Length: 396
View 1 (cartoon, rainbow, N blue to C red):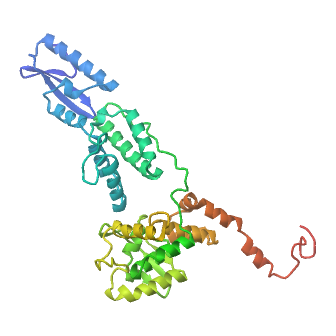
View 2: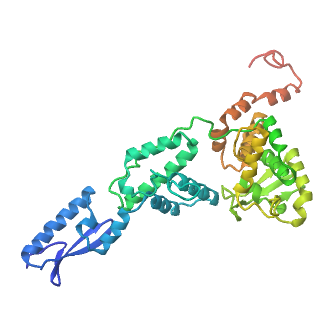
View 3: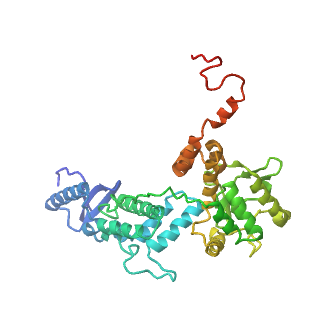
């Protein structure tokens, strides 16, 4: 037993081998006496383990079934896709709205739960991730794309890719079947589907009182839904005719705005008029500008108003779009009427023109087509010849 061996040693009445796996030092004992022959066997065993680790085929639970680490490995290998996406969500820094949206989509399309909480046949969520093949994920994506908007499908792809990436990094799966799971293409306008003036009129006719005022302010100010619900009377600058937007109200609590920055929003005449009408209804209470008329309290969740919104669109016979299209309506109308993009960017709370160009390119093109016309009108007021090549008909 005088032979020097690396990573293999006697340990009491047994042989112990040492190796590194997933960045951790592992020690495992073989239930054989530490003779020279058995120590040589331990060296060969260790070499085989190192090779399997290198090529990615090492199965800890199969190699050392009685080891505490093997029990951990079994738990990893039994990780379901449903558990995987929940682990991934815990690693993300998300707004309350985004997290809630993800959870609803995961519940329905990953766990496959119906309204009664019962999993539907064929759902991928309950299955161990190691049993799911790439072809199954591709088929699932295609099925979703036939019934959901591209953005919703791509959000789900983000979640599932993230879950498989983490599972692979944790050693729960030997390979990643989601590595080629790409997003579906969105041939639309980035989700921008604004209301036309006649549609807005028909929608407004379905509301009364505070809810009428809220919808009227929404489409004339371009606020986000959470910002509308979180608006307080202390945020209104009547003299400056503007709003100080510094919070959103999401799932019954105040949070920072989506960009984590506050901003001032200038009010046009119609937006200001909507606030003046609302002033008589809730200002004396000194809190939120808009309260749920059914409870007299702040809107605890966006879905509270969304249900009324859906009914209003049905009665108005207006094609369904979510309330956030009121924000898009403000932006698209403003750009179409020639408002400066930099002004609209600041009103909406974007941090650069990139988002404006991404979502409202066709409306910005209308602005670009009229660029310079205002200067032309001003230039015509300056004395001198116009259109003759110079003040005296000369050319430079």
